[in-house]
Image (cartoon, rainbow over the protein chains, first blue to last red):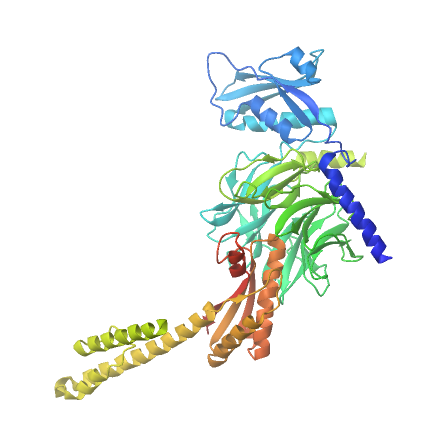
Length: 432
Length: 189
């Protein structure tokens, strides 16, 4: 019985791996796989003056956002070109108008037009400083995505990751596209494993400043920080509950690693794993009723699921000897995790019962630490495919891989939550 | 052959040092025995005798302390240089590891003032998270062995560094093997 079950499982897995090579229509979650062609026309700028853009012009930022979203194929045209846009089946195009405003600011008018009729589908106006122009573009592109796809885009979200600076791992925060990068920690000791608080205003991370791995929480704006869960000597692997702010984490006690939930405000903790083996890398299900984690109870790290009180544990991964660091898609339908094969790390997804395994990365160095975008359509990860570790973003099916950092060593990307105002909207919509 | 030259060189150094000791007051190097200085002390004039004797006692005491400190330091260095190596993704102690740990246990038995921190490490392969648990398992296995050897567990602390503190950078099997280790930090009570 067991054998035949295993064989069937194995066959279905192998088939899926093959399927993933030539098809992107396997997943029926959200249809990010069929991209929508969209035109982008450079914005008109005030005549007589040249604006000193910090890095990219607004239409370039828009193109990057639209491409990174995984939902569009950008058709770049130097000016409105009905023939070219129609031929590329771009039913809509984005453009804008830039004017000088008071106090060294600029006014950017953004337009989303229907290509054939030139009807204005969406128009927004922002008066910002040059340095904040990217933010305005991100906001507008998220509105475009909401208009055309009915879901919130992720252009206004952020990433935290770990950079080696002068040989020491430090926490960085940046826009999701890698711009507006800022160093959050400045210790002479290692900082790592960043996670975002639900309001995106604080980062929970592991610091070795006391020569032991210990969790800290640090305010991104003010730099105020404190140590978390002081009754434990060694804590790591933080995962935040986006509704309550509670933190799942691993703690080592008497040489054994177990899972705990703690409240960063009251510092109260409770243990949720009670096995003889070691448990680590916990993560919440999107409805927060279940926890996915890694256990080595079978002699090698494998992924398990249990209820959030620790009951009803079941094993999820059976293929391969090393499956770790699983994380549940915000859409609820897939799990992403890292698997080691021949000493190389690669990223896989599977259905929530462990079936339907799809390999997302292959033959390109080590690929690890996948992190979902808040809309569940994209995955950030780190890869050493170019010889150094850098941060990449890909679609949930492994396509459209885009590098967003270069130089140095950058690892452990962690996607922020939606901006708080969109979280509220999201919840309301969810209830309707 | 090699060791013969080694001996020869060591011998030369000792001779050199002794020669040097005979020429000057050898306060610079407390390791060298200073019998000549001691022998000449009673021949000093009466006026200086008491203070000289006091100085001499002080100097000898300082020397004795220094020698004790050196011996302690040597023992600490020995403990700290004994890295315990592990197989890939394993935390079981190898036969080599057990032999080394027996020596470490012996030193800890001889020197009850020592308390140790056992640091567990992994190679760069695998996830940071799982490697934290693996590093912890390795340091714990070391502690358990020493505990069975008779070292009180209050004298031992374990810390996992996961893959964060490689001894050797790089992605070679050689580097991986050197990084899959537990090492010791020694504190003196």
